[in-house]
Length: 196
Image (cartoon, rainbow, N blue to C red; front, top):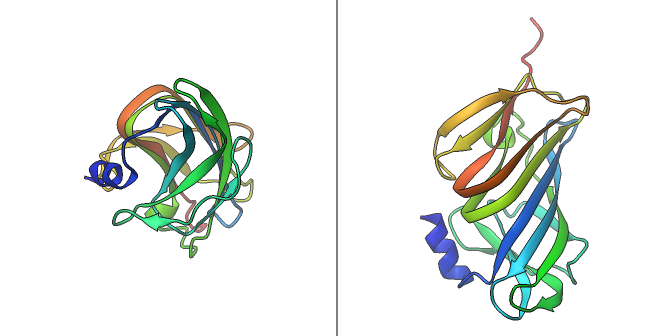
């Protein structure tokens, strides 16, 4: 599967993620515009100086912030729908040291907001992850008719379970998971139909 292919290309894991926070913005055009990610990593090998960034499209721009050094490397394709690059850290970590990094992903989709892939935001975890936090904020001019929190059967599988959620006064939905393992989770939504 994907995980084996990815591990084969990236080599042995040198870090684990202690916490991960995704804050996604959906623009007035109903398209995902950007995601701000705050990630705390712990070195599980000595001399960790970069962490991999994996994405299911190369139609993204990665801007590095706090804790990141220089520019990311070029994206390379490592699977059918999987691309990777490296995020260099501002310092090299010794075994067991932790480091906080912040980066922003901007999307360049063709813009078919009715396509399923553009009406969802998911996070795939190949190993295990603790303290995962996902927040999706919708522009006030682009509020979905219905939003669901869901768990998928793998990256290309069907939805295993879902529940309807309601946005808060800031037009956002939020979910915190204490831990997750080998899982694909996230939100998906549908837009209001044309007025009758």
